[in-house]
Image (cartoon, rainbow, N blue to C red; front, side):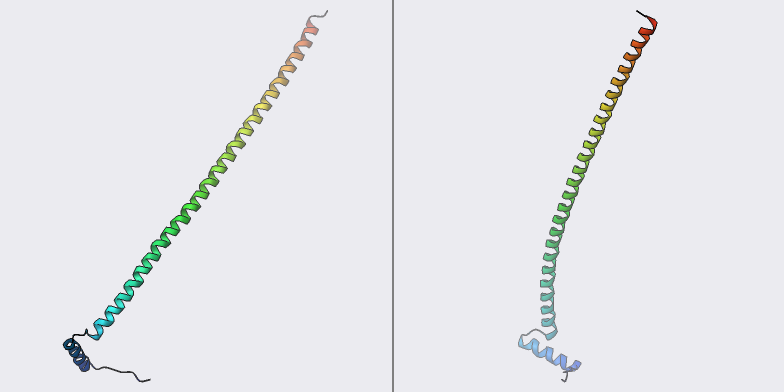
Length: 118
C-alpha cells in the first residue's frame, strides 16, 4: 500500500481551504478527538481507581477487624489460662498448708505424749 505524504506547502493550502469553508483544520479536529478519548479514559480510570480504593479499604477494614477479633480471643484465652494457673497454685498452697497443719498436730501429740506420760 502506498502512503500519502503531504508536503508542507500543501498542508498550508489545505488549512486555508478548511478555514474558508468554516471547517476546523485537520490537526485541530484530530487533537480534539484524541483529547476527548483521553478524557473519557481518564474519567473511567479515575472511577475505577476510586472504586478500587473503596474496595481496598473495605478489604483492609475486614482484615483488621478479623485480626482484632483474633487478638481479643487470644487475650481471653491467656487470661483464662492465668486464672486457671492461679487457682491451681491456690489449691496446692491450701493442700500444703493443711498437710503442714496435720503434721504439726501430729508432732504436738507426740511431744505431749513424750513429755507428759500418763
